[in-house]
Length: 590
Image (tube, rainbow, N blue to C red):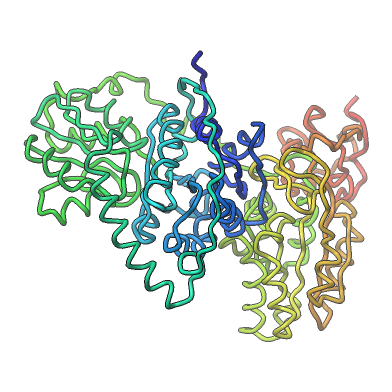
């Protein structure tokens, strides 16, 4: 019986059916659900790794041992994993190895737009790109076949809409894949220069064979209709183009690297005008131009953000494509203007422990170097308490760099904030750098006992593994002390007075310091929030707005300040900042 699955769930099913034994990942939207789903299948070992580099190294180790293995990440995570990626392309594999990378066109939950197809080309590994959930499952299984046939890591490129859209999938049986024998082979797996030179030659030969495979691969398909226009597309972009121009001829690519040169030439010779529809960069378009073929692409379709079938249809219309080929049903739709949509800026949740931290940092007028996570929202009004956010772990290095540029006096005005999961991912080395190079940076670890932004995944300091089973709990205090930080303290971010005192003391110290702001995320299932909600006494409230400046969604300021008791978690921050003590537990308006 067919199942309605997310693209990510379908990848997980494909991994299960392909006989995968080991799956590793670091959570990152839009890829997170893949490994979460894999962890529910018996017969597969799954883990959240500390970061993407480690995740790939774990999967590669499993592959070398003879097992089929998968590693999953979002596009920026691929940057972290780039070191083992490029070298594993040289070593090749033993058991099949697939890396699933989910790109995020439109930056729905990312700090940049990045096209991972270029990593495939740079690393000389094949790249497959599905357009729906059935293909996500099928291409996953195919990727393992290609991996073992050509002795290579294979990339499966997903995008947000394919990852998070549901379509029907036909489940199959799990393959009984035996472990391949491990044979010690220093020339293959030890990449000293002499061995690497030989593997480089093997890589070039392998890529030629992959090129030949691409020419005949069933996942690259020609669909001839009206030959006045030919469209080359892959993945989600194919869906948009097919809906926008159902009467056009198509070359649908499932393997986007290496690209099938002869198949492309054959297609172009049989259509009058050629277009490439692809999201983000001109990856396919540029390749076709190297073949000396006239092709149109980004002249008509944007290079920024996600495509849609309306955008593609409008681009083709601007290119003069005849109307009988196009689908202009979108012109009959009711247009909803942006000005009619109520603004819904992202905000920290009611009861979020990060809110108290940012209130104090704003009050002290500090420069705050920030990081990736829920707490990045502290940059937005009314908290407005973060100055930088670059990538995972950058906050500590940024603060250290500011100190070295401006002198030690700058450290009295600067702090770095980083989440517990992010600190484990990429912050530890930054802290080591501060200690080793005589910095005095104060680091605030926002320990909410989870990987919050991506949906409450476990990590090494939560005490649980991916299946929710008890695991060793990393002690952040001892870790910080072990790298040489002598001033380490744990504070409750809801105790504003004490927390402010702690920040003042640590930024004034002449050595590195760490404040662990420890309070679990209010939305964690294992955290039972039982505090009664607060209410506002409108008779004594002077309307100063200090409580509103906390940015809590439960606070309302219309004709008078009030608290939505259905949202209030009873954290007490609003009561702590109220100068007239007008906020107390319970509704005071009566």
